[in-house]
Image (cartoon, rainbow over all chains, first blue to last red; front, side, top):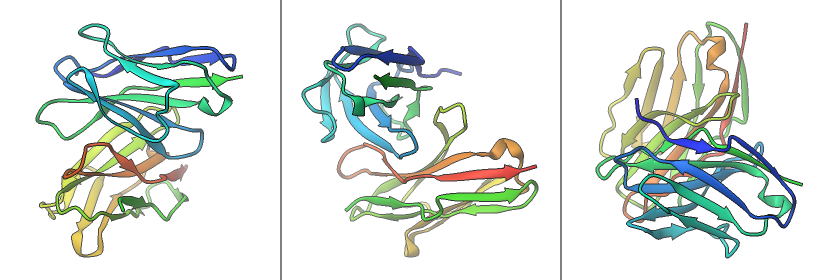
Length: 113
Length: 115
């Protein structure tokens, strides 16, 4: 069964460093998303992406964040200068053209020290 | 406002008992989808069910059942004959289709099934 994959599963970084989180959505999916979950809290929407551009972004998704689909398979989230409060689980999700269900990857747990 | 409320923060039941997780939602939109996701201790989000706003039929899948009541804006989830493997955080979620398709999650209910 096709699934969304994410790498790395865990990342530890120093405050102020740049991180890139990678996702490989399900192959025939066209809509891509990033969500984050601060430890013990609910899952929050960050950004949606379709047709090579951002469809919508939340207040959390400020200038420190960017997304890219560098090739036909990867979808990345970059945090330019990480802050302590960026520590969270980051989930990638994708869905197909006629599907309403977003399928989530296993997440990347980011720890900023 | 678009909102999902899961009033039960944490529930503990003994294995084989039935348990119901409550979900109440708010939306001005007439067309929307409701979801339940499971987050086991390993952390991933597992899709369980999607229900659209036009379909109020209840659904049963094995030990899982869902009760959607539009009149009370509720979408409750029942696990029958619970098992230890059901221990997880369960999230109810909403997508108001008339606006966008970002998922609005509730805060989750942490379910402990005790052996």
